[in-house]
Length: 235
Ligand SMILES: [Zn+2]
Image (tube, rainbow, N blue to C red; front, side):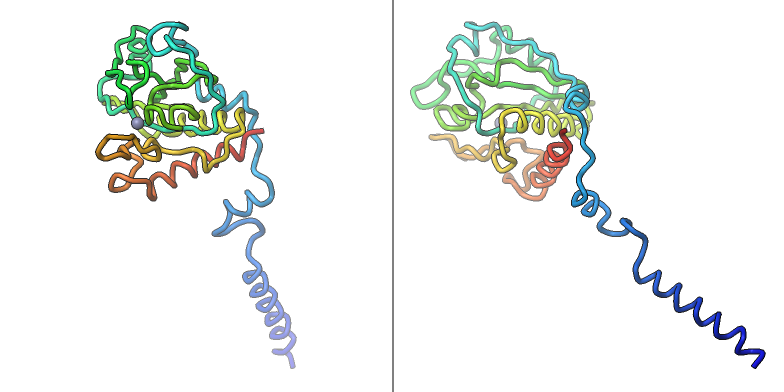
């Protein structure tokens, strides 16, 4: 009998502790990210994300070079590129665009104005805007909807730069533009998305470091995940 006085409370203690282990700690464990999201992601003021993007506005002069013809646009897509230029950061691209140095032969079915132009260039330190988002660029598919309806963002890949930092800054900028122009995530596309008439291959391997075997796959989905991560947090 003396022994039972100890065994019964001990058995109860074991039972209670086993029950607790089955329930587990509240809010923790494997689906911590998912449970945070379902209970409402932490809101981040758009001004803070804007600061982190570090956007500088340095437009190509209206009426010159890539902006010599003003073609109005209501953006419905955002097109992501990479420069494939291993020596130039965002600032050098900005200078080249302002000087009219990025020429491309104007043809009936190809480039429409004789210059390349896009809206933003992003590197691991800064994002620079070259033209208003209310104007069409010349960066995707000549006369196609990629040029007529999308904001073009070029990611730099110069030697010594951090690709991760460049991609994160691009994801933040993309999220802000989605919010501002009511563009859904499904309309955030790689350059690959827009076939170029008369070119082989028609679908460019761009941005090449986010493609799998030359086309969108796991890496592209991972990037869209980062865009959505910031988009969901914009207050
Ligand atoms: Zn491209």
